[in-house]
Image (tube, rainbow, N blue to C red; front, side, top):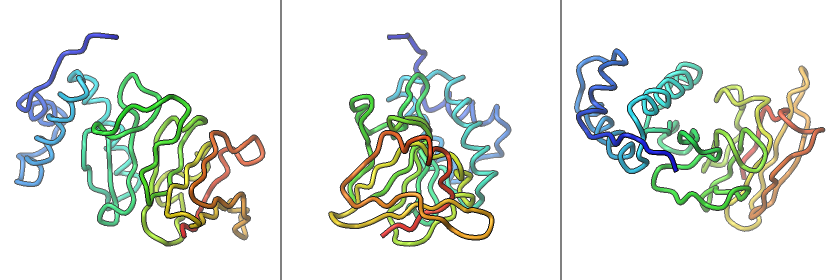
Length: 197
């Protein structure tokens, strides 16, 4: 296990200031406290926090309207869509307060459906809890899905589609609870949209 320098609240505030953030508002001060607490819980160094922040800033620039809710998470639609980035040194995305779990096992919370960037549920995780059609381009996640976990209420379906240039072609349908650690070469990195519920 590698040794990391622990971060305190003041270090996180300093790191955000070093990244060029303006004087903090009440909301940004609360976010700084959350980031500092989570960074300390995850034993992250200042450079690891800064690297995660760069990834989040890039994601938020791609998909406006998001809100950073933690050191490695962004949410949209009042928390009904959440993207989680893997913590430094880990392959699988998880919130800081989530257990690590066994490698190669899905970790989508109950009543959510999740797409994963890589096989074995590794890489970024994009999750939804509302019933609606989602164009993955709106989330900067089109053509980037290799595994999935449908953990909605029993019997609820998620349909995943590829945009052919003129229409939406069904790639697969999942019925909760179910998962796939690898969608296979025919469907890998082809998901462009999904209908949840």
